[in-house]
Image 1 (tube, one colour):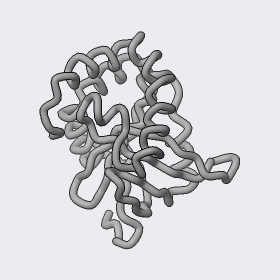
Image 2 (cartoon, rainbow, N blue to C red):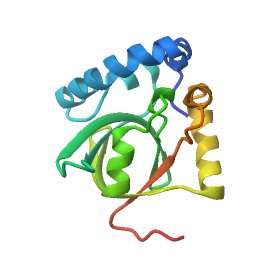
Image 3 (cartoon, one colour):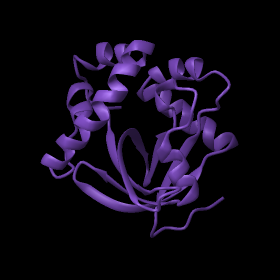
Length: 167
């Protein structure tokens, strides 16, 4: 769990609402990117405000083949990093999810540390365990499920590229 932060609960509550998600999805990603660049990948606006862990994902565009960067909430599970493709509860999948499905190798930066990872979509018990960890970290994911309607929210597991993944 992230350290206590007096802004975490109110900001998380607003961010998980339909209006808050609409506003934050358009503001936080670009602002997080700027703050990450200015701090050498050590801090993001979201992590400063909420105490939640933010990762800077660099993936290869599914269609373009070009590098694409986005900031995402995520959390470590041992050496693995778990990312939730909630897209703020929108009806469509986030672009980064399609990118990782097409090109599973990606680069993650978190608190100034950068590494290469291989992504796979969690299924079954692995997905359920990761989902429960995600909801414990950020309860807003439950609101995103409701707003996403019929869309299943994928859970992506990123494992360091220099280690073997066991199935």
